[in-house]
Image (cartoon, rainbow, N blue to C red; front, side, top):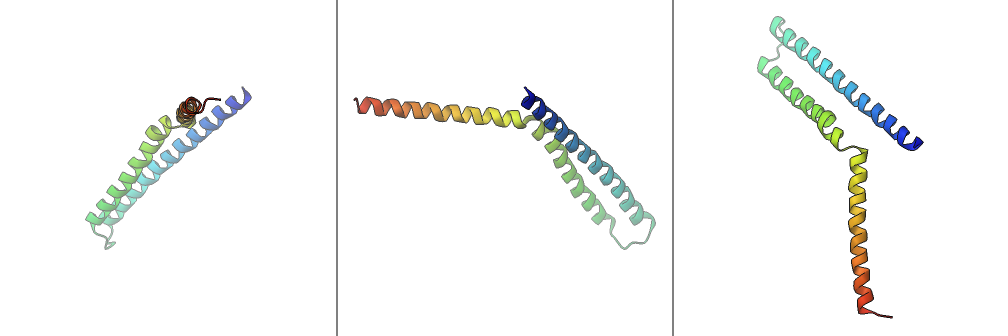
Length: 110
């Protein structure tokens, strides 16, 4: 019971860290994008606006991937999902071993 409670606590702690990093990523992305467009538009930086748009678009794509990882992938493919998959594969292996053992027993009666 205590082990399960500790695992639940660790899972919750890790999820909060993931969400916190995602929120920081969003705020940093937003502020940097605003700063970049402001610098290019109002000051003579020598940077092309199209280049800024490509940069921000690429960064937005990375942010979307980060969002998918936090809210979709990690939400469903967590420790319990891993345990279920391992248990399923172990059960399949044990079933195959039992079938092979029964074949061996049929072919080699004592």
